[in-house]
View (cartoon, rainbow, N blue to C red):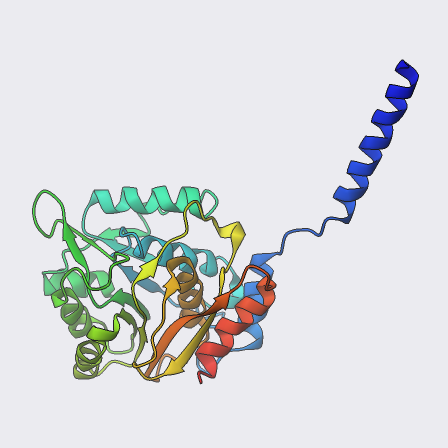
Length: 294
């Protein structure tokens, strides 16, 4: 009986090993990103001349949305093909840095932003904003940031609820970016006209992404990749809903593949669930949405 049991156990192990051998390896998301941006980018973009590294600043990076945007851009910047250097996270206070790093550690596979990457910024002070944005080729910011903290305005966060918060920091950011910079702004449909007005008044080239309130996926991490088929249409009147993690994936491509001298307004939203779609196709869908919106 013992001999029969040993034989059965051995057969079971062989079957398990065979199944494991046939199981496809997880997708190489870094390679997918590199291949996608190398194959599809506009002339003059960071990806078209990756040796000239560009600095990206993410405003409100300690918020529920901002931390995912920064995390994706930080990962993108680790590839040569992106044409990016390590990004700059702008937070209002130390609590913003702590919240950002908690997200980076859990959702971006032990990533970390040290003091060389995180800077405190009082978004009510023009001089400080100008100093913090100095040297940044691209500035990523929401139209509204929420003041938080024991003292109102101590911390400024980019949150999931795009209707909450204040728009005054956005006006100050637009007025204080350096002349050669490009602003990528995210706004709710109700704020799109006001955001575009501020951007045009500043005279800086810009990309305005219009989307409805953002949602986050519980316990998501970078290895899960893009979750939805994301599309874009020209103009501000066709915005849809999108997961904040997928918006991060879209912005990580936008900062790299778009011509920073041109302005555009795009309505962004999820077209379908991407659970059964290969990651290569989901990354390509974002690339196509940015370069050839419908």
